Image (cartoon, rainbow, N blue to C red; front, top):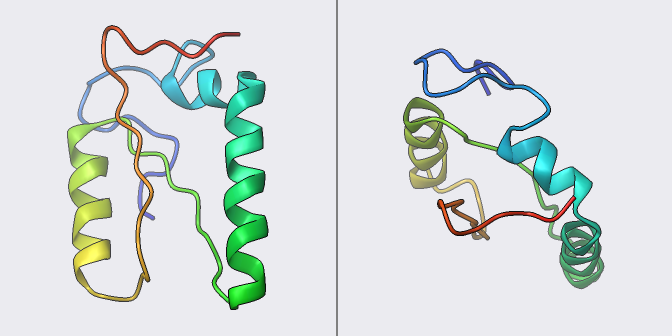
Length: 86
């Protein structure tokens, strides 16, 4: 996707404190991804992991999903209360 890992609209820098970094630091997230992959692989479905930390990036992901090339989407939306443990 265009601009992957870049914060083009000024909503926050892509750095160690970003949501993406927090997700990869959280062992629970790795177990969730592993479970999803193990469930989908025998069904010949291939998960794609996309992080959209800005409104522009989220709009791009939504536009991609609306094209119908994905079988589904598993989403997570960070909030002020939702913190990944490091």
